[in-house]
Image (cartoon, rainbow, N blue to C red):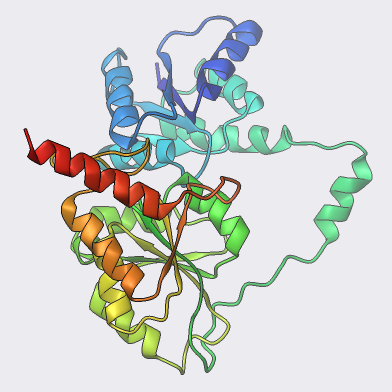
Length: 324
């Protein structure tokens, strides 16, 4: 029997698992895995591996995830790469999709067959009242986001430091708030990692192109005034050092959004989402000296943090660690 993993931000996967059991009865080889606010990508990936290990048949696995491009999707997608001739990943999890997946397992034996079949039911389950609103939406012209080259340079709608790079908060909240035509991951390290590049490109939201370029290439692109007129660029940096390099190279950024910096040995963590080494602190000081402002928040609706206070707290903690 095909194993099913329900994956979500927060408790949604647990809740929809319970709803499915109420309607279709308890199911074997179905696990819910959740990404909680205090967890990171490695945590949910470990939960997925544990869930897969509990299935009787690990050759046929179907992931039903909440959001395309979100962390649960990205981690499922990274596991999927090794089994892409067998497994399947479907985003947009809803209750009609889950019920149809349960029913399909009675007559279908492969994850890919079930994935193909349940898409129609999932879409048909999305309805609206009054009905004329659905008709009006269907006939409205789609907004245009041209990616064709015209004279001019990039307009930078967001430059963000985020160790997770392109994930749910970027693919949804920040993309909707800033309306980019291109998401550009600027990283020498990621450029050399073909798997990470592929996963980032696959996580791009509809209508937006995702690219991975090295630092030197981004500096060259920023100086090109012949091909990027009308293009709205959202830049993603894995660390502040890469951001400083592009600023020193002439990329005209005015503000850096600081969203997430992962903890690692030698770093201090002044809050839940940011961790700093001495090199990080020194780099932010250089960015400030270069005239950049800092916008410290995970998503657009968050209140902004005070970067000066965060850096001071981090420096004090590092100094205390050196005394021991």
